[in-house]
Length: 312
Picture 1: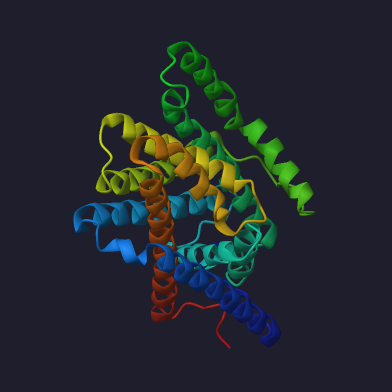
Picture 2: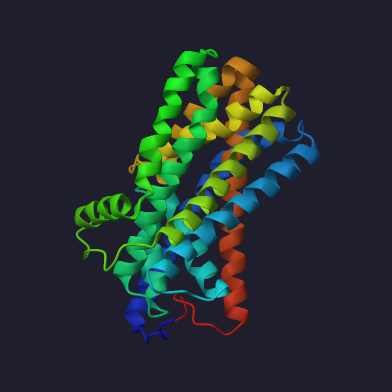
């Protein structure tokens, strides 16, 4: 691990301003989601909403460990508290229009701890690519419902696993990351990630996406959905929705698009009104968890006496 670096007063103020803007956008997103879902929350059961919340928290933890393992594979293994503050505070920036801001926020926060911006940017792109592949892999679970259980078409769609698996090969992943770095006008990748790191990150990404799919299922069951087919549809549908929203950069955190896709997929089973409620509640739970995780991570590192980028 590299040692923390000293930063100028101007740099600290700029980082503080960036965090304030990110928090403001996150709070605005939270307020708008509460306005849409607040009136009907009282109709839901504590059990299902509680389980959905646990799935959300577990997903955030898995996503964090995927990012930390990626950064470690690139040469910077940070202590869990330090990495958590960088990751979760940086994640708030995804609510600022333009998905790239989450990576930018993590780059600036990690710089305080001696991690080069290029390395943090690379970690963000690697996680993005692997998460996209894992989301599409889970999306195959929704194919039977989308194709009305046509077994031949479903068997054909499973062939998509081949290119998705190829993406996880070190040489292919390195090429994809190098392309992303060129687009961002950042220095090239120093060395390819090991296959062990890639598969470890893929496992965490699969878990993260899968848990958010379980979150959707719990909420869908609470509004009247039933059957194991709904479980596959919820997990696969979330995987597809998350993958599409990842590549739509102008939307903050995929806002709107992910919900629209989920409503489209769930409406035939639970009705359009219930599907809309599920999508909004899922987004609300995730936003609350993002804000809470950032606050807890910042408080924990401050209590431990570690440097905080926003400190004056």
